[in-house]
Amino acid sequence: MVMKWIVKILAVVFLTVAAFSCGSTRQLTVDQQYQLKEAIGNRDFKVDVNRAYPLSGRSINLTSPYALTVKGDSIKSYLPYFGRAYSIPYGGGEGLNFEGKINNYTVESGKKNATVITMDITSSDDRINYVVQIYPNGVASIYVTPQNRQAISFDGEVDLKD
Image (cartoon, rainbow, N blue to C red; front, side, top):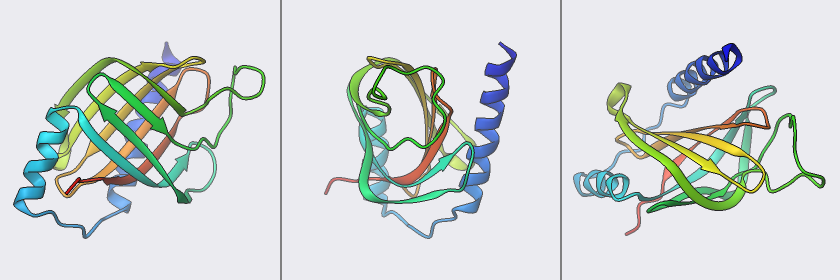
């Protein structure tokens, strides 16, 4: 129980540091900001990921098209994993590459006008908690806490469909 709280506190600290250190100059038009709010409210958005922050080690620039997509009550997670696994199936399992059903989905307001989305997912080999912070300029931070692996976080931008 104490370990869970320590991981959550570290997650919040890590997300805050990542958000402040990755100042983005990206600006959205009023129409795009409305489109972003609609997408979050309708549970229909995609975050293109460009940087990974393993819990241990340096940050990693991602050159392949990794993304997290939410559509209604389902999620498609296509994210790389760098870190320690505690208990996984033989062969490594599917990691953070899967499609699944969202068990819990909550939306709250965060600091700096960010929208904080929390989702719980059960994949075939793990239970995973996703916390997605989306800022008004479309920049997003994703913090992933698997039950059987070390936590990892990502930075990216929301893909606004034209």
